[in-house]
Length: 194
Image (cartoon, rainbow, N blue to C red):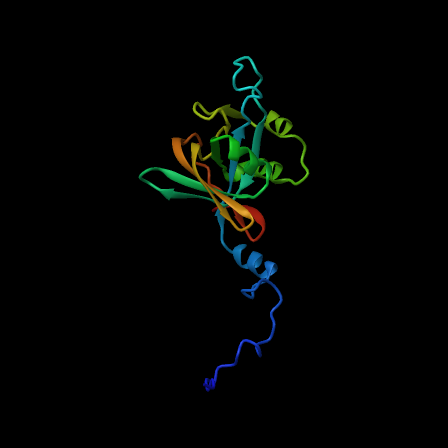
């Protein structure tokens, strides 16, 4: 039977450079940059080098800036963060189930910038002059005066393209900040709201 449809066949459609779906990396990035997102610092502490030895030194603190952090569920309280697959934080959270998030204020832009740098110095040095306390459950650094801090335990890891979605159960939630506005990321830049 002959195809008598007046729609052009896909063989005659012009080729669009990019993914099979037709969108290029640059087009996707440009479109998503128009979505304002809150900025958080995700932190975790490496497990002790020898879990059997109570005197073994604890591992290093690790931190990374993220804009892909959101609530998932109220009952139970769940949130997720999207991590680049194979990143240091992704590898750490594959073995360390406890982690934390500090929701940054507009006045904490410098913290976001330092933990977002590629090829940066060790995280130990980056944390040295960032005022923080240790989470009571996770042991991870929590930024002083953040808008909110949360401690989480990983419930699920979901591969998603070149990222891993890490879903965590919220174990603690605090509001240490004095009511400053949030730090947001919009059109490739950190901005203050208001």
